[in-house]
Amino acid sequence: VTEPQASGDVAIERILARLKDDGGRITTPRVEIVKILLASDEHLSADDIAERVQAAHPSVATSTVYRTLETLEQLGVIDHVHVAHGRAHYHLAERDPHQHLACTVCGAIIEAPAALLDDVAARVRRELGFELEAHHSALIGRCRECVATDARSSGA
Ligand SMILES: [Zn+2]
Ligand SMILES: [Zn+2]
Ligand SMILES: [Zn+2]
Image 1: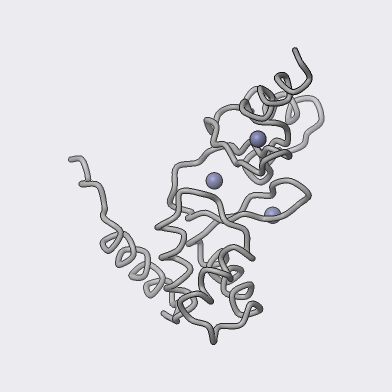
Image 2: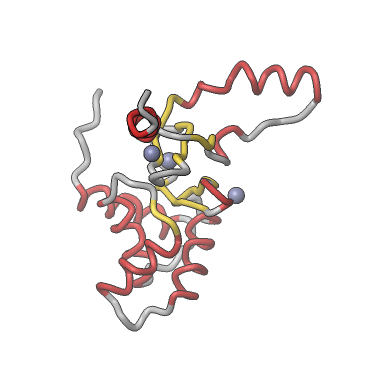
């Protein structure tokens, strides 16, 4: 049985139902953050999310958004990844696992297959006994477009 592609409304109902099942309260900032992440294909920082929450609900304080992000993460609804300079970006936890590539020039976050670093993780475990959380942090570098722009401007 293949599940039909969930529309935004169905997806939000499902996420909020799970939140309730886990004993979580349904509050305006929680609903708004889930909606924002559902509607966005990008990865958003806490500040991006706060800005969007406040566009709809000006009375919600930035500190409330930060606290709500932490709570939603504890409840397993969202997940974060560290990108350039340690900033965290958030996405819904129910998304398929993926590795992140963060461009330091334009700020793009590119999704790569989750298994990208499996060989490295296995080797680190074997040789150093270290359990790598490969998805917890982005790989930092320059994206294809920025590399191409750089090559053009340097006359290569
Ligand atoms: Zn992601
Ligand atoms: Zn770039
Ligand atoms: Zn972290």
